[in-house]
Length: 68
Image (cartoon, rainbow, N blue to C red; front, side, top):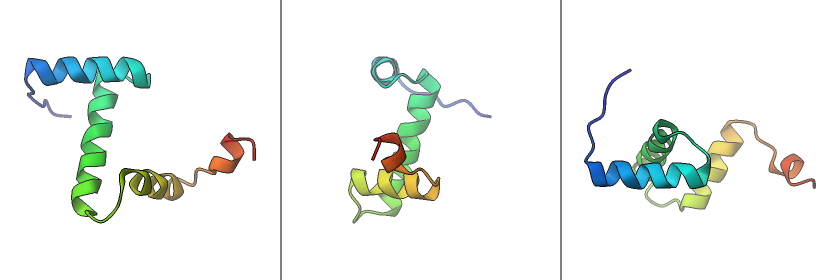
């Protein structure tokens, strides 16, 4: 595990977003980092496509969650 140094303003935005997304500050930062890396590696994919692909790779069946 390492330490990532970020400025105070970005940390505050992560803190606010984490409360909305019901994640810890670290989990929110990790999520944004992962999505950013995936977006850079797949520039033709939209955010929704990236998330859908990650859900598929994790074997998440949205139909079961949505009750359908």
